[in-house]
Image (cartoon, rainbow over all chains, first blue to last red; front, side, top):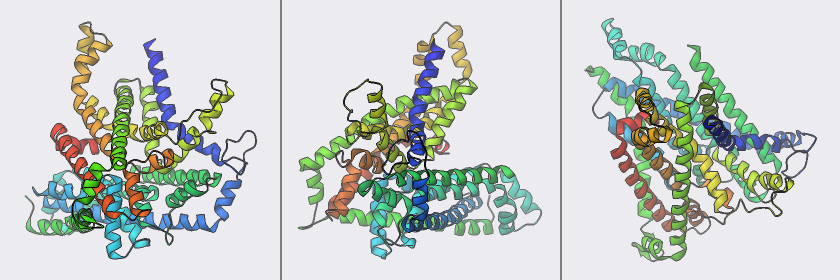
Length: 255
Length: 281
């Protein structure tokens, strides 16, 4: 009896957690021009509308540009920081880490306000540079955590062995340490890409008409013109996330 | 001990990221706090006075607090249930729970809020289903009210609460539970005397983390509340971009930041920084 009850409870909760995903796919396949659940026929017309609308295409391109640049910058910065801390092995490490993690602790809306203030001062609101900076600040703590975890698994004896064979610090770093944290590097890149790809709160504060990522356009759609194209963009966004997830999983299990 | 050139290379590699965050985050934070002191009448504490006395602002803060407390308690309760089965369940149960917890993680908050709006609105999935089965005659008000906001927020927060609770359950020695069983303790006795005390730090951590998270929620309440359930984050957004009242928005941000830092310090004190790092990873 208890076994049955616990299974029923689990299925109920899991259904609740998966419901949005289950619902969004049929919504995007409705043949009607308004948002409804398809009763008989399925139709791809809203995907066709999506891929032939220059506005949505432009937003997709903006999203990919911003997310790619964010992933590259966050990965470089966080790999440098984590490897630097590992090499230094200093008692000041917690100070560096605390500073790096501040944006994760602050409420989203506060981060948005801070980034708005910064970019208004620098005059980079509503530009690619502005969005990349904003998304980097949001994503950096996650990239840093990923890299710190990767380096924490590394044995100190690796460095000692490489040095005893006469390798310099930079050779050791490049040929011994970094190859051993490769899956962490892919993890940091993947996480920052997905965080930027999905970012809404900060984006709403700092973007306007010049650069409009997909979440920003979806947000405007929800406000002014709710239609099934939003459901099909959502499905496409989920698919891109899944592709990134698979690419990451493949790269990190290769070795 | 690191050699000298390792220290130098390490230092120059480690420095850029924290420097960037000091310049691009902590410094502007100071700027925002300075903003909060500017009022139409000059420099002063006018914005903070307004927050404390203006009935509209006070009612929004109280609503935010009420919703966040309720959502946190519900999320942690659901998360405990899931974490328990993730730790002690059969392999199949573990697999099902893991899928249910991990998949929503990768869906954006905006898409989730949109999907919930489609489910909960007057002619949405839930009402259509209930009406077609004859359980209700008139559509229930599930969205554009506090109920809708709470459903959407709970859905977002449950996965985040599962991880710290699961990690505290994982530290519990299986033999303790076997011992309690062999001494004749039933499920509830074992839960009360063994599981509950040993997982309390994880539950507390989950509660604080989820509560901090919920305070700054912006997208979910805005979409599911439909402008009728304005919480503090959306209010800040409206102050800035519709009323250009940056001072008030900045002051509210400052207060939020202080509350969150205080809660974070409490969390570090309770759980310990090392355990917290482990949980984060």
